[in-house]
Amino acid sequence: RFWLRAWNREEVHTDTHWPTLLIATLLALTIALVGWLLYGSQLRAWRESMQRVSFANRVSHELGTPLTNMTLNLELAARSLRTNPEAAGKRLEKVHEEVGRLNRLVTNVLGYSHDAQQEHPTLCCPDQVIEDVLAQFRPALDRRSIEISWQPHAPATGMLDRDALSQIVWNLISNVEKYASSGKWLGLTTALQNGQLIVEIQDHGPGVPSSHRQRIFQAFERIHESTCEGVSGTGLGLTISRDLATSMGGTLQILSSDSGAKFRLTLPFKTA
Image 1 (spheres, one colour):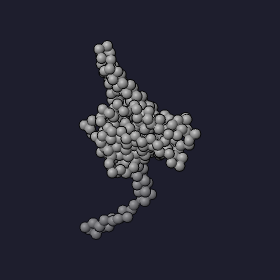
Image 2 (cartoon, rainbow, N blue to C red; image 1 turned 90 degrees about the horizontal axis):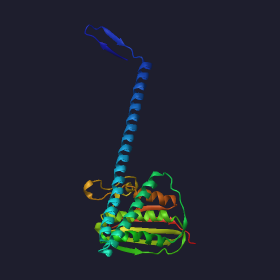
Image 3 (spheres, helix red, strand yellow; image 1 turned 180 degrees about the vertical axis):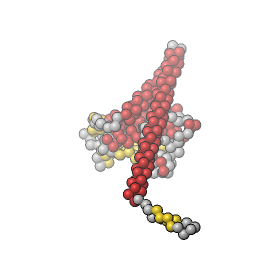
Image 4 (cartoon, rainbow, N blue to C red; image 1 turned 90 degrees about the vertical axis):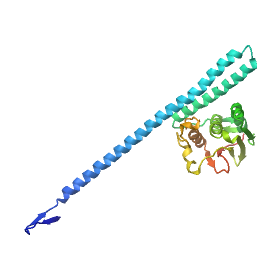
């Protein structure tokens, strides 16, 4: 209630109809809330759309790179097959390397498209699985003059998802090749402790800031998004690797390190 006093001392009283005011206020708040929810929904839809576009562009680029390299090396191998068989053989080795890279990329994309990861344990030796993955990377790491420190201490045989372990290690080594080649060093160790397999991969690259150590496990997340950094990627490797580790009852975490980045993979492992 409020009133106005005129110059002629005539009093004018105005009454407020509280039910009407309350209804109007609630209606205004409802409209504002609906508007805010619609805005949030549209914003999320826009972000998801941009992520899909970015994801499609990255995957297209990543698929195109190994295919282009394979085509080029096959052409060069065909030209030198008769005149220089040794050079042709080296070209074919690069083709084999690109085939492995392409296969892993497709596996990552397919893995991300499925919400649930199913474990398929088989009888295997962890050191041999990792050695096979490392063998695929040796030519690329040698070309970048990256020294490899491989210390295998898990020679036992037991039940483990061989493909999942291979994919996790492949993604971690691939990150060293792409983002930490400036450190010129890759450290890889395995150990068996209290019924667990422990795999540690370390580099001497630029490392990961503490503020990004959880974000890097999110899909499409990269520390640097600058287009001039010269590194491509789908941003799914660590996301899928952690999901695979979790589905196997283990963990994948990044540890504090004085130099570069250090990842530790821990998986339950029972020897046969």
